[in-house]
Every structure is written in C-alpha cells, then in structure tokens.
Amino acid sequence: MSKIYAITSTGKTEKSFLDVRFGKCENIVIFDAEKNQYSIAENQFIKEKHSGIKLVEYLKSQGVTAIITGEVGPMVSTQLEKEKFQLVLLSEERIKIDEIMDRIST
Figure 1 (spheres, rainbow, N blue to C red):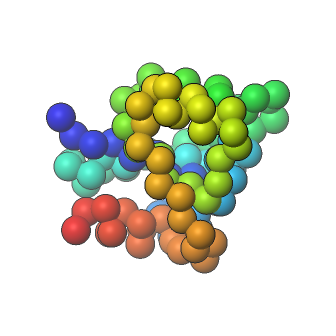
Figure 2: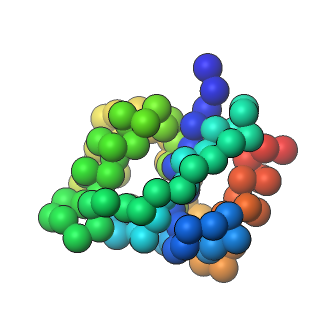
C-alpha cells in the first residue's frame, strides 16, 4: 500500500512554500510517494470552527496516512493519534513543496 502524504501549502503550485499552520493552511498538497503524483486543493475548512479536525477527517477520506506541516493544536494532535496518522513537523518556513516531495521520494 502506497504512503500518501498531506503537505500544508501557502500556494497552489509545487514551488509554493510550506504553510506552518495546519487547520488554517491556505492549501493542501496530497502526494502519493510511490506513484510520484500529487494534487493541490484549497483548504475548504479554513474559515470554519475546528478547521483542523474537519481537515483531518477530509484527509482520512482521501487515503492520507501522514501529514507534513509546521504545527498542530492539541485537539488535532489528539485526533491524529486516534486516527493513527503519522505527523511530521517541520520548522523550516521557507521550504518549498517540491523540496519536501523530493525528500520523501529519496
């Protein structure tokens, strides 16, 4: 089974930067490392209450197994643990999405 990553992004291209906010990220990149394919979607929950929890539920429905972001709140952290998601926190704000995908692929 292929590992599918969700990467929070500030923009809509692979040259965009990592968005360090999870629930309030602008966009989300769903990256299938085995197939080396990705798609980018706007975070449809950004303006909602408990946006992070709703985003976790959405990502689970998309088959995501790991999340790469800068930070998550305590409710999201608990939900990720409950749902058995792998969480990777990066402190590099100026890292581009394609750099992250390259790291995963190698």
